[in-house]
Image (cartoon, rainbow over all chains, first blue to last red):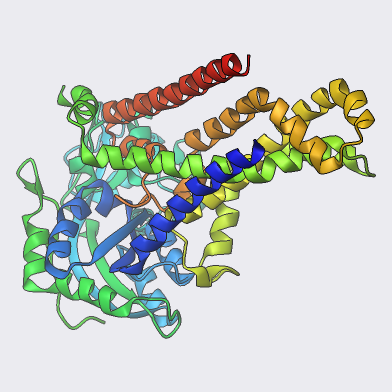
Length: 278
Length: 230
């Protein structure tokens, strides 16, 4: 009676666990802690099958903000980080958590806003003037507020604009603590401005009344970096497979694959690896 | 326009990726229910039939734990299984096994608390008979659990419902890895964040339909077994 259920249940559980263990026996896989922008833009969906065909290594991507991705790696829970906040990445390497940092590609940030443009900044190329106008008019602004690469870039731009955002932010400045997609969804719902990476913006499907307000300022440059987590710190790091992934991405093949990824005829990321790393 | 149809096209075309997601969701949640039943049912029955100091506190605590926030359970399991955590050497963070562990912790209190109530009610009915027959406590627990099996099915379904619906725990300990730890709920969260709201809604409807089908099957099994049992 009860034992019949127990045997059924244990058969089910052990069946599942056995399936998982056998899958792990020939484990040619790595965990890459990366950002929501690389995943939500569809880049990984395009690159990973190419890498798998080349190297027969499965890449498991955990998509988080840059800050969280680096934290995941700091705990030893990833083999490679693929993120976009150079100062945080350099600190990660300097603290001994990463082996070496490689530039891999770039795109740029764009300031997105409602078509009605309450701050009157549409078409300007000066991101600093744009942010100052938003603050002066207290137009709604959505901040990621999640220590992501985009959040770091936004805070740096407020600093350049001479706005002490921590001291002056009012109800117009809304920190949502979520990824790029949710931030765009929120900006759309509240007719607000938001800083986004161009890749996520191009692939974003729920634009509603949102459009690009400011683009083309060189201060909107967005560099992505690759780092192998330090195997001396965490012996569990799969350094050969992880390094193979990095080597492929910065190789001529990998760089060409990044350049070839397009949505609606637009290139999302621009390769700029210099093989040596830093 | 195409988005409105894509979710249904995925289903109608028997999309392999979608089936893999559905299969993983079911495997994880059903395994968690099975494990939680093996722990929660005996535990609930034991508490129902035992009197000891502090029992009321335990019962209240158990009932309260039915409301454990999935995201908190997920975080706790994450910290345990992380390479820097006490169980890090097992290397099971970001795997389906980790997801089963988190969901099991989440639903043991639900199954245990509902079992306790059911068995306690039934015990009031059976007390004289079982006491007269001088049945051991293990024997009583087994008899009561067996005789309450149809009511306990509801406890299992409540546990399954909780497991299949939650996103907070599996997102944190599974990592929402494409083709490996992506479940129905984390896929809905991902599509929502990509602004692909129609597809997200479509996946959500698939999930609801599957949960409905499982509940209908459980109901049918119950009716059928009750007939068999006469």
